[in-house]
Image (tube, rainbow, N blue to C red; front, side):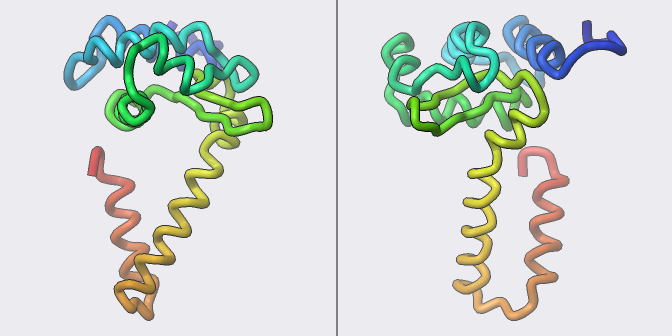
Length: 145
């Protein structure tokens, strides 16, 4: 379905998952743990079906830190759109089904990034934000920087 003009956001996410699981269109093969995590998340599409971190850890027999690292690696190096939810019902991880859902899921990360950049600015005693903005732009446009 990658060439389907009418593919939905969810279709494209699932196509990417299948590519990673079969080691197609990847710079390197996914690890067994990465594939296992994707296999688990295939049944958890959309924020309303998010799977709690604790349940993932139990099923995979891994620590929360290792699972979080797997998620981060799948996001950055394999470009899989895995969302995270922190709501009253506990939240968890899920595969994105639409752009709005992913924007919402990334909102907290965005705010954390801004806060961290403000701290960096203070620590470096930067008076001009232009140099920092240039560095951020360069980092965002450079793959895996």
